[in-house]
Length: 369
Image (cartoon, rainbow, N blue to C red):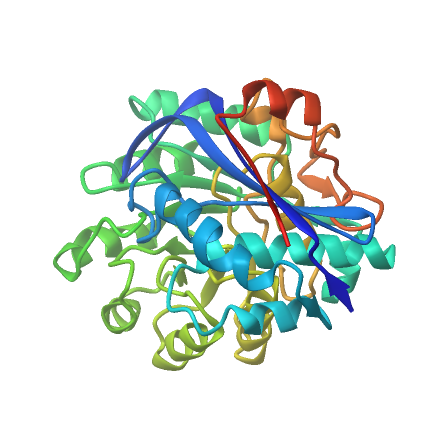
């Protein structure tokens, strides 16, 4: 049993170390909402992965902050819960807004794990002390630049290279990379940029031995993905279109893909992420943990989730130093030879850098039961 006695809502803006281009556009910084829950003499921390504009899915930072202040935190403050799944169920009557709800649920998991004195991954059912990681590379100015950036990350030992693609930037860069690196594990991510009318271009990608093509079609579609999968030999990986374990079941039953990208915030928190993992495992479909340019708080949550047994493909939890000159946590989350150590200690095993966050925060609010 645990009780949330108080909460803090923080928002910081972190400049990226590089220009990150996808089919959505170009990103040079990340606005990071953070939620701190207090109870029993410890605190649990989570990170929101919604964005300023509803590009990835329908949620926005402004909408999430409003719901946290006015709806979700009032629902949980001062109320005893048997475990984080009970808190998850308490927020389950609200439709959508899974990323905002996940902030409360994920912080509760961290809080509970710290109260129990056990690592979050162990509490979720994971057993690994290292997880395989890959890297997600944005769209580059040309093919030569693409090959160069891939070479740098192959030399750093990353165990999967993912290239962002979009119509007009797909076959040519993938061919150039595959010719330069015939043996690497290579994938592509379209972020919903294509339709069935582009089947010919997507079928051309079959020639390059990709592990999967990620979310080529609409963010809310499963039916056309099933149609497309029937036309391709490369497995499709479902990302945006899986917001729950039910979505995963439907997509895999329809044949919409053979791989699932599990983003814990996208599905509403760790409880539902674990259910997505279990459903995919029952279908014999591997999963991996996707990233949303998280700071160290979200990255640590992702690493712990990745310790579950069906996370058999490298995830997007690459070294934090790729992204930030200064992270929001005190610990360094760094991979070596494509392996990321699971942070040690209770909960996520990482500590919010209070001095830095207080100095750069654009929003600092407190709530009490």
